[in-house]
Length: 155
Image (cartoon, rainbow, N blue to C red; front, side, top):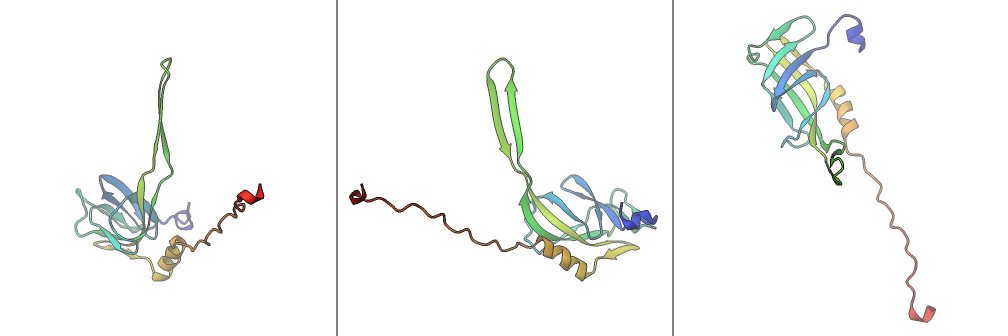
């Protein structure tokens, strides 16, 4: 429970429908959604907002809130951990193992606007969150030394 929720205030949030899945998004939150074609640094706009709240007022849609928009910035693309699919039939000696990784796009919620409910995170906070997702340079690995090749004269 966050400090805001302990004081009896709800943070600004909205419920958005994307690719047939509903997400509850709070301002400044990072979340993962199925792979999107947007490049890192671009802005995604979610216009299917089912509900928006600033902690005091609630805008409810029927089915969507008119004119409501949630903007999010693409932070990175990645893959979830591997999921192992194991099939077997008892007493038949039949066993099959298969694994796959699902792709995702991680985004940062920058602004929520729905009529009287409006909010935006400041650039300083967005910069700090963005920095934690930037690709850190990795030192190149040194080649493993191999034993010198033997020649016929060494035998």
